[in-house]
Length: 500
Image 1 (cartoon, rainbow, N blue to C red):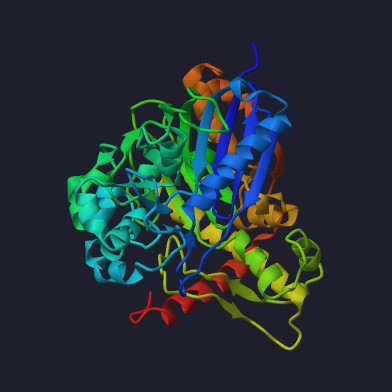
Image 2 (spheres, helix red, strand yellow; image 1 turned 90 degrees about the horizontal axis):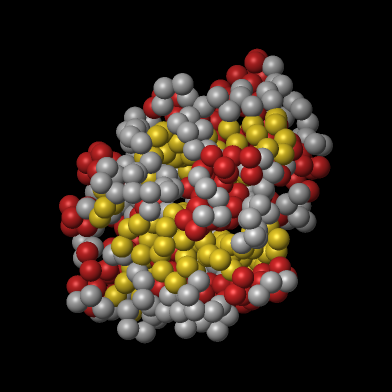
């Protein structure tokens, strides 16, 4: 097979990365750039969509140059993205009418609290809980608070999208307004079973259908490049998926029961559940997995809002470490007798609690508590949050999770991954490709143009670099779990009027 190159745009929460993959799924070149985080008010988080687009243009040129290939050798483009981040722009000019509202943003918490009685209906219809995390409430806020937006939207003059949709629009010169099922399923506007926009959900959130993009399978043509100064016209965009579903696909989790967890800014656990949606009784969300055809596939997902961001907080906020990798060495110096517990709810508690007003808490501080104890408690807090998600899966999905694949920046920590295996009591497989999100999007794009014949051919390309097996005795494991459970219950009670 002659080599065919796929260019993946991996647009994340804090940085944009462009990767060039060859037909053996090798990353032959990449370029990455951080961008500005805007915090206009407490709990509000915004991105400048124009800054993101500018970074895509610059990084695409750099990645192609580093790969030592011509832009004409790019056979297809893939996009994977931070999912719920919401953009609203003018169709005529392509100009955003407001900065993008980021998935972490909590400005719609009051609306969600006021409408909480509707949550069972919403969850049955969309698979999601009513939380500021999801795009629909952010879009509603934009339509209500940007001058003229409501009337412009009703007249068909505005376009809504998550970041993938915005990039597709720009890459195709404004000729395609489209998204894939995995991103659409995170909006609170998509019917879980039909994988189509739902009129009743749109009515609930006061969203006119005229602003919504076309919903397509994750693998297939979304449009072709047009009018760009950094890529030739006519390159097809053939793979699109939200970052976590792309990671699930990139780790070859294709069968029911296959699970993965990505440790990035947050931690995101998905378990593939097959062709039928499984309603959650434990407040996980039921979501669309990345798809290769029109038949929907599903996953259960649990989201931890703060994972790697807690390590960044130790570095940038408390100044306990100078770089993220230092946390392992510092944690190694912790007093084994310390029972410090850190609940890292720095932007609220995600699944299975869904408590946006919660804040972080630390229990067990004594005069002997050291910076090393804080480092160890931070790593334990990350692992214990993920354990809550796996426990929830066990209640919803027969058989639960017997092993889990992992990727993301914090997954490079041997100490954290061994701790995760100890806490869960199951093997943890760290994949060879540390950022399988970009690889998963490339897989989807390559399948669409015949680089690989089918999903089975991808299994050998998604290798495992190291397996971590449980080594902690049961007694200390149970003691840690009990301390954690008590601490989380205390946080929940503190930030709710009625308690848990």
